[in-house]
Length: 78
Image 1: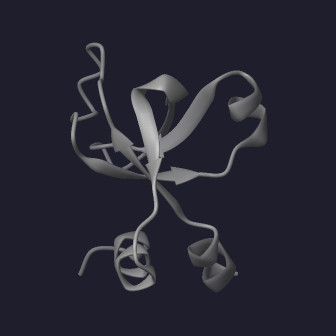
Image 2 (image 1 turned 90 degrees about the horizontal axis):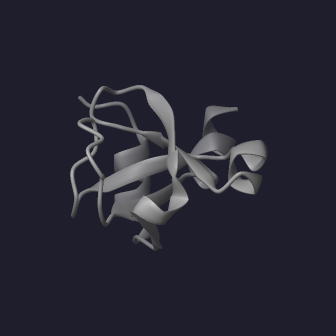
């Protein structure tokens, strides 16, 4: 199952944080699939705390990374 999760991993670039202390502008974050949140204009992002939280989708822009980079970022830190 982890392998399928890695294939679906998506990344976003934070453009602004409007006071959200756990987000850094100009930093790449992993975003988790959450259809209900997306319908509400939100993105489920793993932030600086290491936990996933909902933030306004307008804070981010989706980025396409090379497969090797995407896999490395989706893996737990070593």
